[in-house]
Length: 361
Image 1 (cartoon, one colour):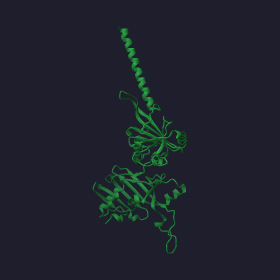
Image 2 (cartoon, one colour):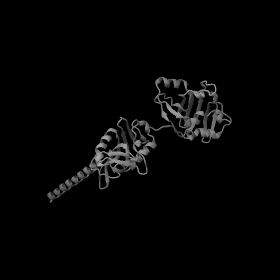
Image 3 (cartoon, one colour):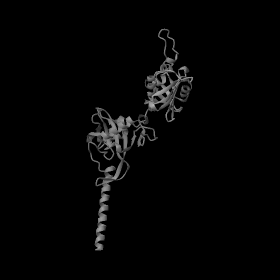
Image 4 (tube, helix red, strand yellow):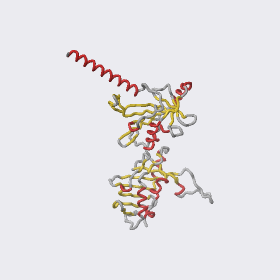
């Protein structure tokens, strides 16, 4: 009796182990270049919330690694990625659809084109090693999909693409409801993913705002918070201004809520940058929040690349209005002189052009 029970137990164990081995093998095969089947949604991700990393590389050697962290999406060096770009990318990965496969007679030629110019996109998700009876086991981050984005179609309504594991079936993919090419959404250039957020402070969190005018010190001023509804205004000598325009003060403080820079200067040589930092400073803005953290913005005129002349005399104009660019200027953040931001007056004009006389009554 005991011998029969032991045999049954051994057979049962062997059967269970065999079943588990089969299930695990099938799951791993499907997840890694295994039995992929052609379908309309084979390029798409099932759930963007499970996507943890996206690696993008082009044939020019450019690479980008986007990673989901506790504070949102970041680049490999922990630089925050712009949310709009990441959300657009995730939405694209969720909605990729196959329009049609490339005709068999064109497959060989298309594979050569893809090998020379395709953008490689690797998608990593939290995924189970295998699923048994509908339950995931050993969930961990792993590569679930590798897509090669090729050139645009002749009609510019989609792109040629290939899925790793189905190299013999390149396809034309598109986004439903979108008429255009999708490859720009898979940029391998890091600058396309970096957030341009420069300042982001709620007005109620501003404790002190100091604005120093380098060319006209009489117009410098300081705004000091008293409580959530009241502020004191001081002139350049530290004397309290008896009356000021409350609405204008609140409007100025609101300017610090959300400000983005246009770009970072990369075309200046060392001497040009040094000349700007030494000679073009026109405004220093220092903001201290209610937690004691300070942000300092040094603003520098941008030399204009054009000369201006008087229409009547023909003389070259040398006044400050025509010496400098009227659309953009440079700035450094917290005295970091290695990074020179390019800002637009259209965006930052009220912050850098407001004078004491505009606020005081």
